[in-house]
Image 1 (cartoon, one colour):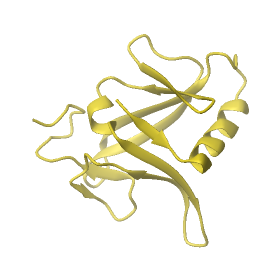
Image 2: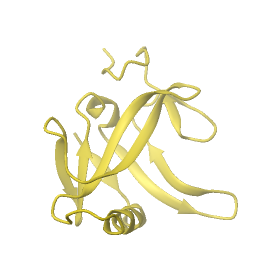
Image 3: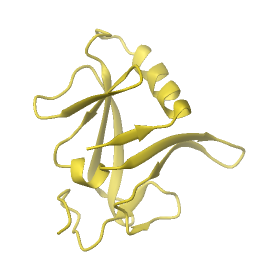
Length: 121
């Protein structure tokens, strides 16, 4: 399972992680996919004080990344960037598993999968 963060995305996420009041040694960012959005799935990012026992844990630069195992197949190969422009600011996902995305880029569809957070066949 691979989640890639651009340098700017890692910097922004690291800033959020450091600003929370918990032990820095276990703190990280949890990526997940949840049912919702206009295309079936929505990206979910949360600051986490520690990984859940079932999370996949990796480090991207100096940032700990936790991925929910049910979301892992849908996030495999995703690239997360941070954009800051006059028209929009926020995290942008480029997901090779997405067969369709909404205009805002916050939700996606993945092949013939239904919104149940399971891998496509």
